[in-house]
Length: 381
Ligand SMILES: [Zn+2]
Ligand SMILES: [Zn+2]
Image 1 (cartoon, helix red, strand yellow):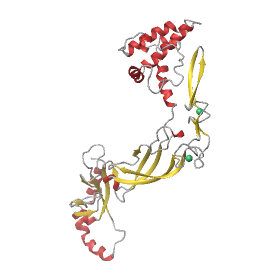
Image 2 (cartoon, helix red, strand yellow):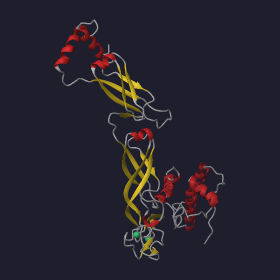
Image 3 (tube, helix red, strand yellow):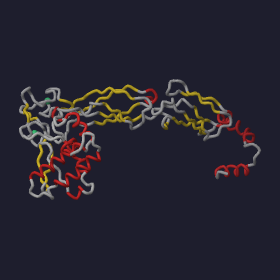
Image 4 (cartoon, protein in one colour):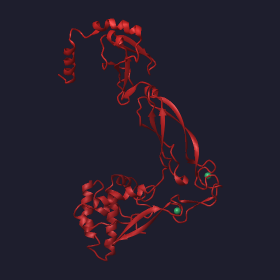
């Protein structure tokens, strides 16, 4: 086998060449050796392919730095797959314009996505009490999910010698074939059909998982819900998703989507909380102080000033929810005052209030003046 030439040498650039120098050199050399210009010239075709390979590597920052470190003998084998670089189809017109970059940009992306070495991610929904927003919350849930089979440890085989490397793909799990497009060969990689991409064939399948290596099991997941969490936030538990097929690679992740239970009276607005407080006419008129239990464990004291009106709000700062984004302490509680009318009135109460009717009427305004005042307010005047 002919030893492989240095990529920088192939492209006739220095090791410190900039991206645009590399591109410029590739463009002019590729034009020179393009098969359209050199029909039936095997030497030119090889040169052209060699240029493409060198350019594919040196135009990708990630691949270039690996090449700079390891040269041609990088760990993990050829970045183009087991068969090495197969050449790509570049139109000669593209070498005058800029149409060739996207072709090279896809080479590594494609080979990477065809490597299925991670299990599937899982998503579960989980309800936590409203209180969890306030102080965080340690929780636990049970899920029924695919897991590495407990009987065969994920091998899929009933005994230790019950598997062998797949003969169709030599245990790689993937097969490649060459597709010809005009004078060019293109490498296409796909999962091996014989072993479904596992690389391994089970000759004596485990009875429990039927050779799949995975089975449904119930497992308990412990996790912490951070304070300040919002509805729909997802907590990621690394490695608790499904195991990969074929017992090779990493487990997927488990995502727990949080749903927050309704509070009996609070509504949440980011780190603020809102509530409505029904009060009778006397409390609004004379003012009062109300105390109700609060989510931080200390009673919430709401001072209603005299002559308050329905629709007025009272804001108590620093008693809302923790702010998850900025550590600027807690939001506020806003209390909306409502007029609470009794559904019935007793005869004796009616008598007593009747006496007050005239005294309670508004200031010195007549009814008509009062109607006009209300209309002005409504019209924003
Ligand atoms: Zn196979
Ligand atoms: Zn099994």
